[in-house]
Each structure stands twice: as C-alpha cells, then as structure tokens.
Length: 136
Image 1 (cartoon, rainbow, N blue to C red):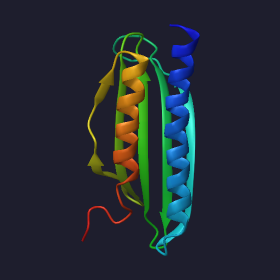
Image 2: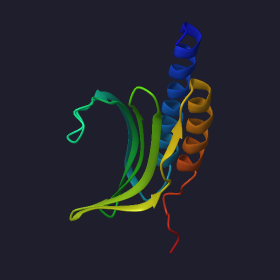
Image 3: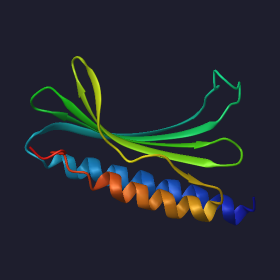
C-alpha cells in the first residue's frame, strides 16, 4: 500500500466520521431527542473461531429519546488483511435489550478505492434513516 492509498483510506473513514457527527448534531434539534452523541473506536479483536485478529473501526451515533428508549446508528468496518467488510444497522435500544430496525447488509471492498466508494454509499444510506424509522 502506498502512502497515497493509506491517506485515501484514512480520508474515507474521516468522511464517514464527519457524517456521523453531523447526524448527531441534526438529531439534537429533534423534539423527541433528549441527547445525541457520536463516537468512534479502532480495535483489534481476536476471532474466537480462527484466532485471527481483524482490525475494526466502529462508528456510532446514539440518540436518547424523551420516552426513555434510544436509537443507534452503527457502522462497523473490519479489515482481515485482504478484504474490508462494512456493515451498518439502525437499532432500537430499550430497557429490555436491543432490536435491529434496519440492517443495511454486509458490503465488501478489496481496494482502498472500492472502500472509499462503498463506505460513502453505506454512510449516506445509514444517516438518511430517520429517527422515526420505521414510520408508524
């Protein structure tokens, strides 16, 4: 991987992070939202089945609702050494657990160029999911 490719990968993740921050700012303006926040974590996990250690980038935006529930927009990127896996979900969090309201499905990318394209599309889809999804 060249320095330019590395920079392009970091830039794609930075754009995703900014979109999640912008979502939290937008959610704070919603009357049903008590508080909204956004975060990011970079981790190396050990896969229990293969003992491999995929790198993971986790991004999220959470909205605590005035009714006591919460919604979370979750975005996970995993690199196993050859393929990027990108998954995103909108989940409802209640006092009894968590339910996936919308799963955007697993997407993959091999090159940094593909990562930038796929990630931008997934992020756009995710942040456009409304607080009221699914509509009543």
